[in-house]
Image (cartoon, rainbow, N blue to C red):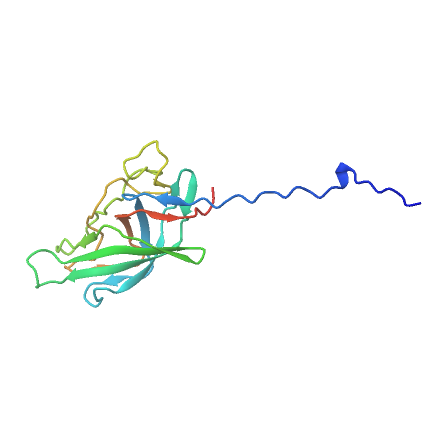
Length: 195
C-alpha cells in the first residue's frame, strides 16, 4: 500500500522577490555642474581641443537621488585661447565641460562656454561663473520641483560664462584646483547612483 504524500503550505517554494527596475533619471538642461581642475591650464602652451582632467566638486541630485557624486572624474576641453598681443581685449580661455564618469560609465555632455579672462594688471581676478551662492542651491530656476539640486558648498545660481581666477601680469593660466561651474546646454539621462 502506497503512502499518500502531501505538501504543506510551509514547505512550498518561496515566492521570488521582484527585482526593482532601474529607473532612468534626467538631469535637465540649465543645471550647473561645479568642477575642480586636477591639472593646470596654461593658455601659452595649451592647444585648442586639448582635454584636461578635473573632478566634480559638488554632488548633483535629481528628485532626491544623487546622480553625480562628488569627486566623480570629469574632463574639460579648451575651445580657444586668445593670447597677449593678438587682440585688444584681455587674454582669455574658452572652456567647455565634455564628460563625467560614474562607475566606469562615461556620460558625454554639452555645456555652455565658460570664459576665463585675465585682468591684466598684475593681480588675480576673482569672478567665477555660477560660483559664490549658498550651499544647496537649486539650479535651473526650479525651486521646489526637485530637479537639478546641487549639494555641497558654493554652487551658485548664475548661468552662462564669467571670469575665473587667473595669474597676473596678463598670464593666461588656470592653476590646478581652480573651481569652475559649467551650465548644461542639453539634458543628460542615466541611472542615479544612490538615494
